[in-house]
Length: 113
Length: 117
Image (cartoon, rainbow over all chains, first blue to last red):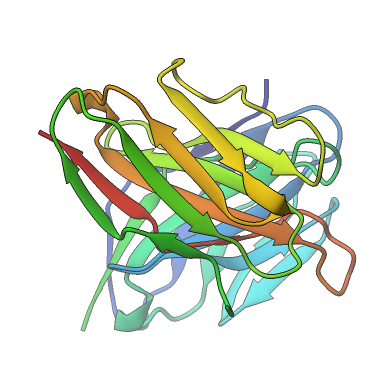
């Protein structure tokens, strides 16, 4: 069945450092891929998405490219801020019939000033 | 409302009691989902409602769990005879189509934190 694997955290970075959070998936066909973020005390928010191979999702300085050949959707940001401290979830979904999302385990990011 | 609303935000109950958790989705969203977020298990899908179709209950962990969606809007997740392992944050999400026609953009509520003593 479908699955998502994320790099384990926590990840601790200094402000303005480069961020990469790895995400790989196992799925048949062409799922949609998502990154959700959960800030402390808040619910999950969609950060970015990509619906087909080679699509690049981007938002708030974060980017992720849907790589079919490596079944990956790594999250990157060139310069993190303290306000980016949160838990990041990679997820896989289908646009047809049952729309449930399959989530990775989540990666906690802590950015220090 | 503007977003997905869940109530209560926190619920403490005793083992063996029944609990009901409520979700009010975004107006106009036809799909509604329940997930559970617990330590060590991550985010698990529980149940999915789409319009008038039969719900996908494949993620419900036991027959103590049930959910209904009345009038295609508000949903209630019921846990009977709660156990300590039911302690988790229960998240509700709803979805519609975005401007690009992507159907699976799910918007989440803040969750209900359930603690079973």
